[in-house]
Image 1: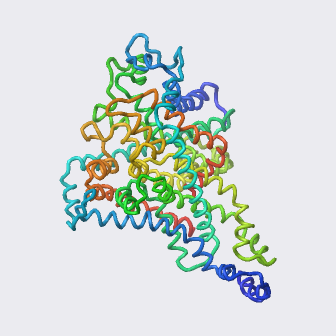
Image 2 (image 1 turned 90 degrees about the vertical axis):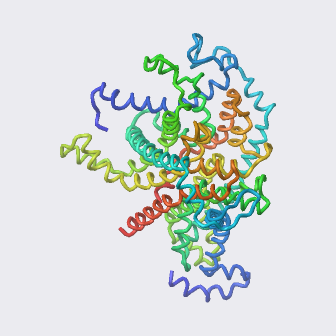
Image 3 (image 1 turned 60 degrees about the horizontal axis):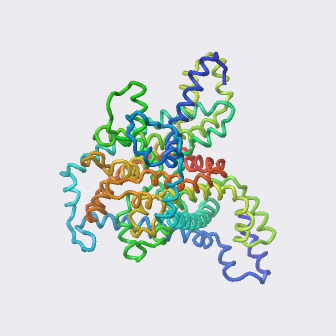
Length: 283
Length: 313
């Protein structure tokens, strides 16, 4: 970039960037502070003289302890982990296969099937949740993990397919043609030559799909009803709020711990995740 | 390709180890249908079928546990005269428009800032994506706590900056409530815009900027005539994608206001939930959520036309 005077750099670069960072990250800081703040300090009005917003002198772990011992939080974590993992695996397999077929094979209706999958990519969950709840009930899947394991792929597969198609287009065709000339059957050339090369693409799609299914809310809210079946977002929303009473300490502890797995996965694969995002909009 | 297909039968005829399935899968059409089968079954069962079922529900008077009969467009007619639905329509359009403008402007600004070289850039980029990856419902609870009228840290900050004198009831006042929801939506969306647009910016060759600078173009003109036109395709896709997501938003309003105070902050999705799941009027709820469809259709058409145009260029 073209260098300017020092004050210009501050006004046009450092200060705006700093403000962005504060705006984007403050809620997470607030989550952490609230989690460790003892109750008598937590429920102190903002205009009280001894309101100390940004720190606490007597940090406590009681909210986390309450969350783990007196609620079903750990069950919700296990449920979410199971559902997110299985639906991600299903979506990856489907997306890998479909992406390969659509980018490499010639067959009738290839164009319209591709368009169809692209359209489902744009369908929001909120358009279909009411009829889908009815269908789930008719299939006797209501209130079981299967209700989500089978429906989450509907918004994950189109995305995975889209990403894999882009990835396969970057792999030269000659690679599998060589294998086939050497006598490998068609599907072996696909499974043993092309799929291993596509691993970075699969990883991007998988991480993205995992965070999306961990994040999903409305299907989980509508399809699950008993507390021990719930996922983290729904459990925290419905079980830590009783009527008008919000258990803020436990809520923030739940929000914090419930974010950890996603943040953990994300922190290891930031680059893959970013290429997942950019791949999802590049087309 | 043609030569391989011509050669295939002769070469493969002498290999006895191939089973019938392997031979079948040598045919691209069979392989393709095998590969697409799971996707088509799942998407058909849980997208196409519910969509048809949703349309059928919307023209009956079904409730939970009570099979309905055909009522034509009565549900839609009823919605037309429903004041809460009208508020929800207004809110949804306003919400989508305002937040999209803010997300685009702020996201582009942040992308331009991040496109410079500075120490700790990878670190900053990783951290600013947090609002987008942390489960929305969970981070929205942090905002709800920050908006709490009695304990609000925002009130404390504004008070000590001398901008307010009394307390502000962020989620209790109808106008402020919708603004608060918009703020959270912008907060969540800016990182997505910034990272996507940053990827677009990085494909623009710096030489173009240098050439423009040598020709005497100032910073604003370089942005206006070099960066912006080249960034437009990415921007377009990002905006269309985000418009659908925002238009069909549910989580933010559900957590922050639940549609209140007095049904003033409903969007299509939260109102559909309140009617369809809360009250059990399945048909009317399905009719409300189908109201998302025309906008979805419009965006899909724009996308398809646009992609086709880009691909044929």
